[in-house]
Image (cartoon, rainbow, N blue to C red; front, side, top):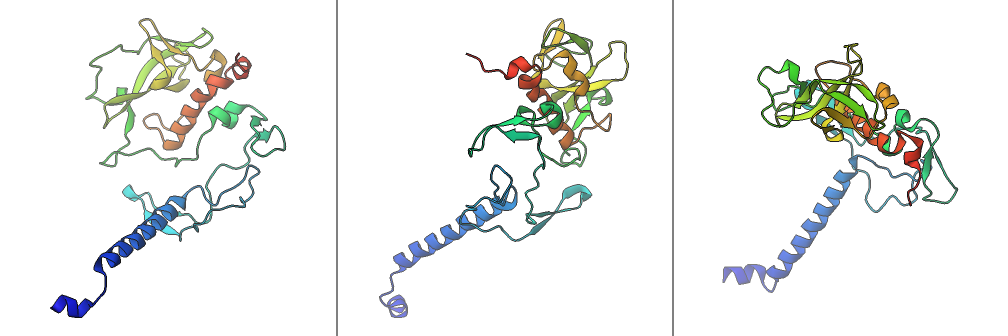
Length: 257
């Protein structure tokens, strides 16, 4: 037979399983090295190169063409891309010891208030438009259910009334409210701050922000534009509110029994 004369005693089943294992090993190698385009090479707690970098090498540089004319991005280029010189110090010389802030942790963006250096451009929808916009600039949007927070007083975690809600920012493709616009002067001073919707509680007569105290609202990061918000601005605003859960008052950082 042709098959027997061509292959002889060669075991096709054995060849198939070995080819599968070789392919699988190559797939694991490829996926792991592609995963190392960010966050590598590894560093220890002191910022030095970690002694054990793992068995996989850094991948070769790959250039990605970004959509909507936003240029190109080449990774890994040998850089981690993380924030440098954070205002933290280790509590002891032992490896793995916790770090404590050395300044204002919320302003420095460390601990629970930490943020990542995302791109300072707005997130876009499929059509290339900014996804998140103020509801006051969207003619086709209105509230169809739930409480309308606009006009309600904003009360901080310490009970201080810090302003009132004057607008909402909507994720247009998702039709979801992402932020509330707070005027820190009820008479309309133009001192505007944004509050993530998941960090507020809308009640019948007020909007409560438990994570921040009254004196924290002035320092909330602002946006460069009044009709869009960038990824970096979102990151810093979210971090400010999250950091307030521990740093709004020194007592919050103390251990609980």
